Image 1 (cartoon, rainbow, N blue to C red):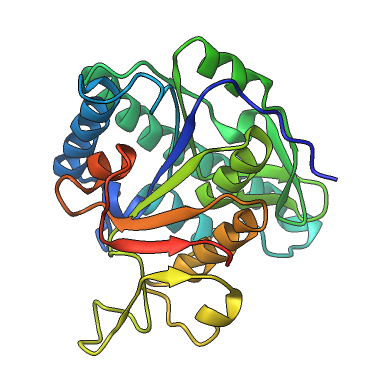
Image 2: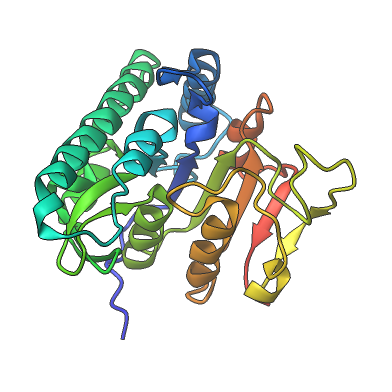
Length: 281
C-alpha cells in the first residue's frame, strides 16, 4: 500500500524538458539562455504576483531534463545496458562523465533562477537515490520536505544512479517527478516541453498531426509516434506512461509548450493553456 508523506503546503511540480533549456544537434552542449531566462522570469512572476493568493503556490519543486548535456555521454557509454565486468571501468568513467555534465547544466539553471530572485536549492539525484532494474528503489524525501517547509524551491534533474541489478542506470527527470508526486502528494504537475502536448504524429515532421487534448489510458498512445526523437529516457511516450501511473493515484498532469511565451506563468497560476491533460476518467 502506498504511503504518502503529505505536506501542509499546496505543492506544484514543474518539469522543464531538456529540449527547452538546451540546444541539440550541436558538437558541444549549449544552453538556450533566452528560454532559460524567460522561464525563470515567468516562475518569479507566478511565485510573487500580488494578485495570486499566498496559498496557490506555497510549495514548488522544479525538475529539469538533461538535454544536450546528459544524453550524448549516456548514449555513448550505453549507460543502463548490460555489460561484462571487464568493461566496468569504462562504464564508471561514463557514469562520472554523465553526472558531471548534468551537474553543469543544473548549476547554470540554478544560477539563472537565483538571479531572478528564486531561492532554489540543487539536489542531485545521484547523491541520494538508488534504483533496482532502472526504477527508483530508495529515495529519502525528508530533505525535500524540509526545504519546502522552509520556503526553498528544490531543483532536481535527470541523472545517473547506482543500480543493484544493472550496476548503473539513467533515471529520467520524469521518473524523479513521478516518485516525488506520489509520495509527497503533489497537487498539480506541469510539464514544459517543445510542443503543445501529445499529437497523433510528430508535429515537427507531419503537417497532418492532430493534437490530443486529453490522454486517459495507454491505449490512447498505443500507436503514437514520439513527438521528439526517442532518447535514453523514452521521449514523449515515456513521459506519458509515467504520468498515467500518477493518474492512478488521482494526480493529473498537463503537458504544455514551454517555447510559448507566458505559457509557464499561466500554467503555474492555474490559467488555461493549450496542451494535453493526462488523467484517468
